[in-house]
Length: 337
Ligand code: NAD
Ligand code: UFG
Figure 1 (cartoon, rainbow, N blue to C red):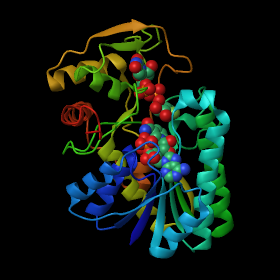
Figure 2: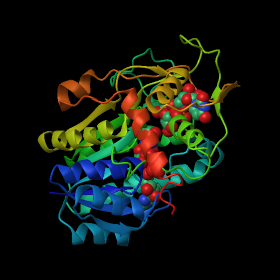
Figure 3: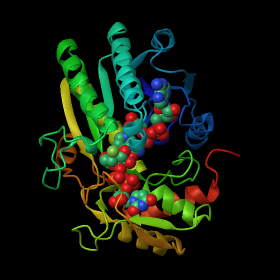
Figure 4: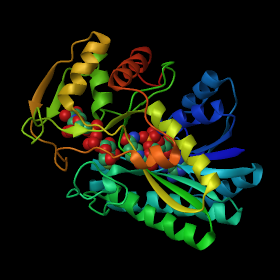
């Protein structure tokens, strides 16, 4: 069975491609490489010893997308493609709404035209309301987004739900918490452009000497050590969650939503201490002002994924820190030579 991964050359898509290939699926990737490198696809092939059909295109281009569906017997789509930088979305809201909504709708139209009935979407914990009590469960109210990026996820969830209802498609909305880490081979990993916004890539770049020290955004939050708490999940666990979601979509119709997290909160200081211990490296840091828009804490209730998908995260914080460093150490400049 062939699965189309839009945005499959990116961080989450490339790791998901490995897990799908390992499970015997055929993988077709459509990516415009606006935030990724074709080298990631070559490395997916190296890890798995299997080939990937790659189309370099913007999935909003109907002709190109149509050709992909016509050339391959695609039975399911996992839609990763989109813009994802929160701060940039605040500065350029129209670009974010245009790209993210248009990409999702064009892909759904392509599926409808070609009779493809299974869809998995990369949503985010950011769709929950900041007022929701922790841990977040899937039935809690959504729409508390604080930036245009988050609103695109909220809106696409609605678009997918309405489309599935109208067409009889089966859709799975996956709300990711904080994916970190890399494939244990160190061949693929997160390769952010410029200075990383997110914690783990920033810490890794401090470790490799590209950045001087970590700025910890606030130590006066109402958390045990005053720093922000998040639900970090190893990228390989997250990728396996997509395989489970595909199987679920094969067996059900309608739309279902799942949290993909570990179900436990980790503070910034805990993550730094674990990174130092796991890799025997000192990470210099200073406390600075809180980052605008950040919440104190956020973690998932993962019961639903465990019960309905039969999926649960297996890897711990030490694995995440070890594998992030392994990738960064072997690829100090990411996929750039
Ligand atoms: P990424 O930027 O590494 O991957 C996205 C891929 O989509 C990139 O390879 C990019 O080149 C491609 N792309 C973007 N627009 C495209 C278009 N119009 N046509 C074709 N390709 C296009 O990001 P990621 O971290 O792998 O995230 C994948 C998805 O998961 C995104 O939708 C993101 O919003 C979502 N998500 C990510 C996180 C996270 O922390 N990484 C958290 C929640 C949700
Ligand atoms: N942090 C620092 N210093 C840094 C970077 C981050 O102290 O240099 C702190 C943040 O303040 C926060 C924690 O580390 O407390 C995690 O921050 P990240 O930027 O790694 O992750 P966020 O939880 O802020 O954001 C992530 C994704 C977003 C998504 C959001 C909610 O990056 O795309 O989760 O799901 F919207």
